[in-house]
Image 1 (spheres, one colour):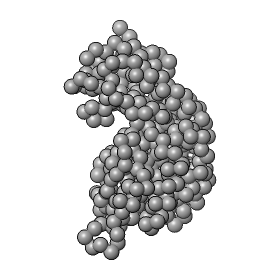
Image 2: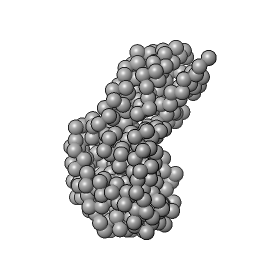
Image 3: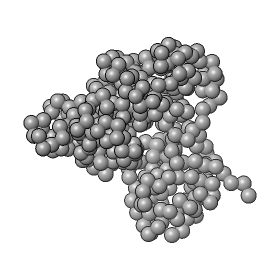
Image 4: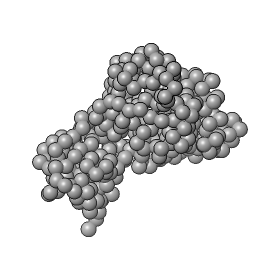
Length: 343
């Protein structure tokens, strides 16, 4: 029997298109550590200009760009404020502590959002020698563990005002910022009020690797030194940067297709009686919980037996993610798999 390979685990599983591969093959390259790779420079300038920032730094991953930003903004013994569901807190291997000697205070809701009152409540005063001084607020948009939640510019501006009222730096983990931009109808330059921004090219935009850290020239100058310390300096990185350039120029508008597919999946889940809770489906993710004990693992196994791969966020919550490589056949197989499952 033919078994379909439908990979809904993440939008990081995509493969470069033929057009992206052609752009990579044709890219002029140099040695980026020595500062002379023209395609890397073009990508960094392109991304910085889009977001109204002075400079950019190409790195292998979004985890690295986030960790570099924290390292530049903070000193050992400082504290970062973020959502309890934030990627930097849950999914970066304890890097906040290991790489920068920084600890975290968390707040917010079940959808990955924090609010100005969280900042005012959590901030630590410099004059209290018993407390780790607050230095940085990090927000994640969209919020992965929140279900692909889009925070929206009004809230992001309110958080900016709250952070600055306490003299704190403000970093955007924009791993899926383009999903938020497409959903909200924003312009990339609308996000220029952040002190630093990490944008990922290897998620919804379907490049094989890479993220870009954005900020002012002084910040990026410091970030470049930290990237070297972290082992993130790459040589003929222009081949990878070319994929990122192609992604920025061609793959943003099509994200609406991923959102539409996710909304369809969310509707299917609303029609089966074993799903007891779903997080609001706003972009390209569907997070849901099953009623039966062990039900998450049972559904995971059932779908895998049909050639359909999804991911478990923890013991209860499952996640389905749509992306460029999901076809109508994959969608049909998933629908049948969800409807044929019995608890």
